[in-house]
Image 1: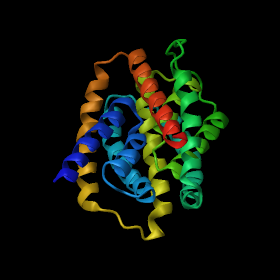
Image 2: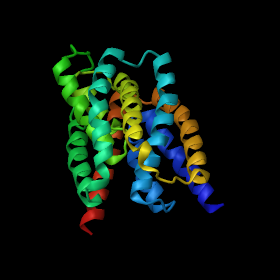
Image 3: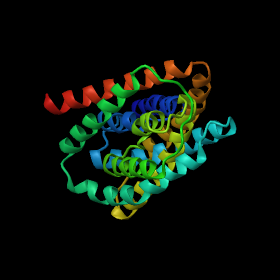
Image 4: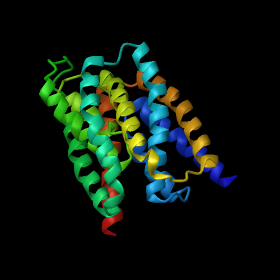
Length: 247
């Protein structure tokens, strides 16, 4: 019963992050599965992809209905990330966990700091296909290696590189997360890994419900405040992961 309660609470938090911030769900899901629910790192990263994929699809529908998805930009990012996500997903098991953790923190921290800078305005800029594809490939690689959706990097990239307003960046990020997570999950599907569905199913259900609440919450917070909240959470997670490796 304790495991079920932990799964429901952790799932709700993951859903709130994805629905409200457009990312951070996988970043929270992986440590929750490992430290609270006794999943191995390999099981946790694969289970996280299941949770993030289903939850992102749910949150994406709500943001799309409100017109907060830049489809062309999102599809450019997502298409460029499919192959890297699959390759990285297949190779992830051959790298030491500490190396992936350090790499994650070193990429996430600068992204968070960039988002904490004062905004220069929220006028969308032109989409540069080359730049979008390069960023999308990087996001796909991160998704495959770390078992996270990549929204923690997609949102800063969409805000900083394409000048999307924060709310549209959140919605567009969910499109990128969905495609990248599906690609990485496909690469891991043939490994024969056993997942504890008695824990994973309620975790995912709570995350889906939490995503709707997160989406409603995002409407009540102004764009700059939402951006600062996202960046602060990301910076804190990166710092904690580095401390965990060095301790």
